[in-house]
Image (cartoon, helix red, strand yellow):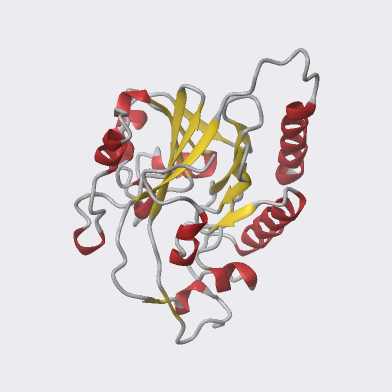
Length: 273
């Protein structure tokens, strides 16, 4: 039922883009920039990414990506990658330094959207204490629990858990800027509150970014469910919804962890428009 309601909300938000053009203000310019937020030096064995043993022996070059979304004069960071303390898989350049190359400071980031609570997506979130945190309610409930589950690192979120920053725990979709141009999409299954994101660009068209709904092409194409996902049926339902959105919106799909998708966006510091 939640996904059905979310689909109605998404359809309503997207319909606003074509409503009453004469009365509407000029739409804000939206751009999308990929940021390198970690390193996987060699192809990785992906056997555990299928609970039906579909990928035995397969090795895939993985990547760790973050994204900067500009909406007029407002900015949103989507995922924050590995922490700079991650050793061999740490980003070569901290996220705040990448933003500095774009002449942005952390305080200019209005929203920081987190697809899910795993450490390779949350490692630098504490760099944006003044941003409103957008995160799935299911994940926020786990992070903010006084006794988080084993393997859950809530430390990067201390600013928001303590009440020092604003957080929006999302039970469904979120129309971030109120005009349908950036939609955080409810796609649970990998974790209870997992979300993906849709960015609508004037020139490139619609772009769907997976989070960890799928980790690489073979995983996406075969509806593979990793052994460590929290809910199998929710994963399959989210994949079904995401793929229908991709078809109906004729969207470019970017699988965040698949290095083969890096070239779908311009090389940093350029942005897709």
